[in-house]
Amino acid sequence: MTRPPTAAQRRVIEDADPVTGRLRGTEAQLAALVKRGLAFRHPRPPHDHFLTPAGHRSREAAAREPAPARTPATAPPEPAAGTGVFAARVGGEEEPADGGPARAREVHSAWQGLLELRRMTNPDGAADRPCAWERTHLVRAAALALEAAGHRPDGPGGAGYRVRATPQPDAVAVYGPDGETLRACADTLERAGWQAGEYTEPRTRVRYLLASPRRA
Image (tube, rainbow, N blue to C red; front, top):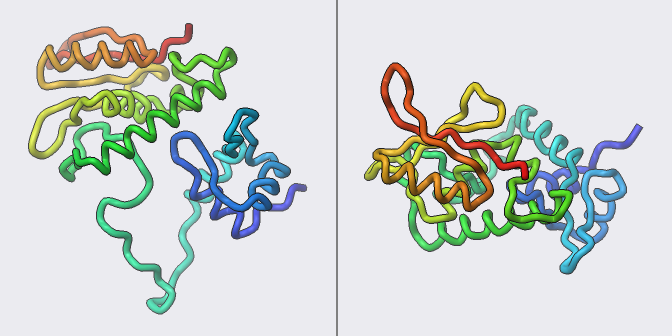
């Protein structure tokens, strides 16, 4: 049986980029994760290390475990406001969207990382078509494509897009305040490798986009 990762290796896994799975650690830590099948070394320069599917499962399993109790003396300081793991804005967040330079840099970095993930994991190396990660994280992937293109999410202080899951396993719904917003979102998603069509909810008559990742 494969031994579980050490505490130091678990920290490296937990700190991986939430979108691409890019890892940062010592050469020894990264080599050990590769040996365990939890990471792989990219063959192209700069030869960064990334989580494998097993590595992603390990991180998700760790996230579901309850945090150990801490005494006040050992409790970590509260994170500063605005820090933490990057998450694409899906719209409807209670906190106002930060549209400042720091957020713009985070979104740009996440989008570039996702394009690199496409190049690494699509069989033909295509970056213009969604990859497997996007197909299993539809809402986050669609929201990232929209935010990276400059669309504003719905929330306090303004109306914008909202991305929501649907009963269909391979599609999301995108809502907007008007038809112009929906058409602009559809154009963005199609350029990002999605296919999108406009529909009307039968009971409410609300217009929305139904979007799914293009396969070819």
